[in-house]
Image (cartoon, rainbow, N blue to C red; front, top):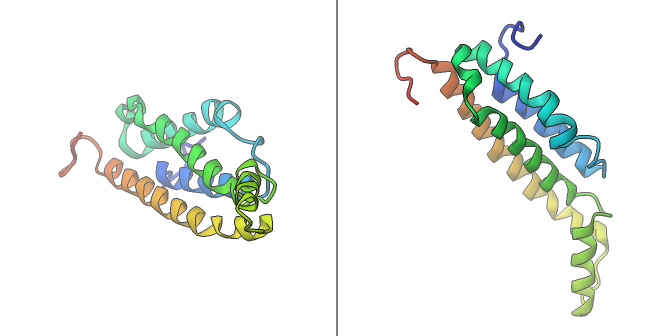
Length: 146
């Protein structure tokens, strides 16, 4: 189905998943997606099909495509979950700071995770768009390189 979609691009697909993953992790829903549940059986094959539609059948053999799908899941989960106030890292920081006499509410700490999550999204999205550009050249096209 992905391969038949006109204009299917690996980077765009993974950017949408990255946004989904960050939002769900920020809401505390970290176990509804992941490498075993979503990436390996669903997202990686969709990304490979999009790469083949974009750059030809040889693009499906590139191991960087499933690796980027897994990296997208990790980036989205890691940077999105710190926005949720009841995650272990926020509670750990609250406890350590309380030990030094600095009293902060978990919400005050989680607000500071938002700029990091936005930066991670922008950096990883740029990497995915760069992949689209590289695959768009395709094998045998002028400027293509391996």
